[in-house]
Amino acid sequence: MKSQAFSALSIVLGLALMGSVVAMPAADQRLMISGTLEAIEADLHGKPKLLEIVSPELGRYRIAPDRRGRKLLAHVGKWVTVFGTVEMENGLRVVHVEGFRPIALVSRR
Image 1: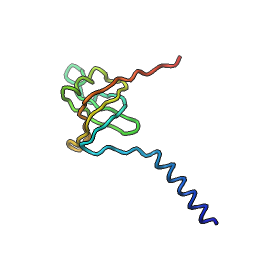
Image 2: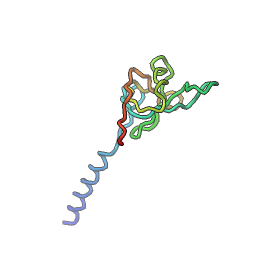
Image 3: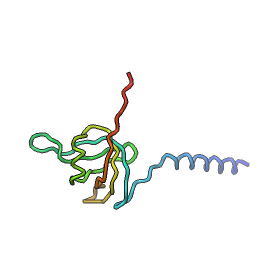
Image 4: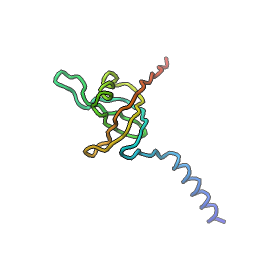
């Protein structure tokens, strides 16, 4: 009887843990990621020129510095949702942006 109870408990705990696991997208896959945009490199005048999106669930992804990716420069420090494809480049996960949506955070007073 103890063995059956232990097995049932193991299954319940396993299912609970599985619900908290977030799958990482593989390279060359479509991705939707929400997080904060951070400047990781700036030009000589201090303007951001290279970005990463930092997601609490998925971690850090570099934003490809192409035409669409550069549009995100206006949103540094803000929470956004980015849609695109992920590629591995020099050991980094790089998002090639197809679109994005700034997320307005509501402050509570």
